[in-house]
Length: 139
Image (cartoon, rainbow, N blue to C red; front, side):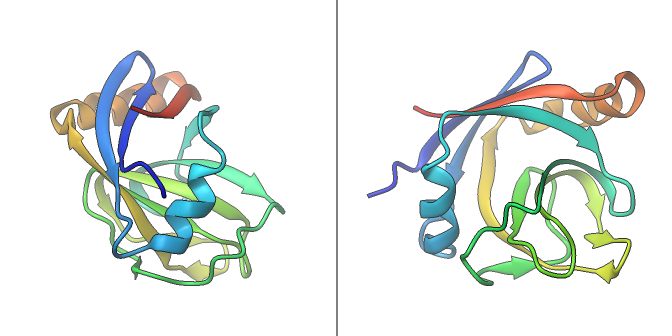
């Protein structure tokens, strides 16, 4: 069974979060296998106020569940791959999830529960200072 509590550290900012296991069980289970996950986030190109982790051609075989094109601030979505490259996006403000091929939908699978007040600073940091380290781990 997937633990639901997560600690996410980005650019020295700490967020607490939870998996959305009831709404996106396959996505949560697939991502939980990657934990702890250390990577880089970069600012989105087409989607608005968000940061993302590109996975390139590494696709997630989870299909669509709890999919949205408009995640709220503090919501992580996973695009499993297909029309565009696989990726994870974290909204820090308004997002209309898109790529060079047009609008996409991603599986909402993680929600930040503490630290939402830091999201505007996170967005400014990644936008103006470039890629930042992200560490996602179970608590």
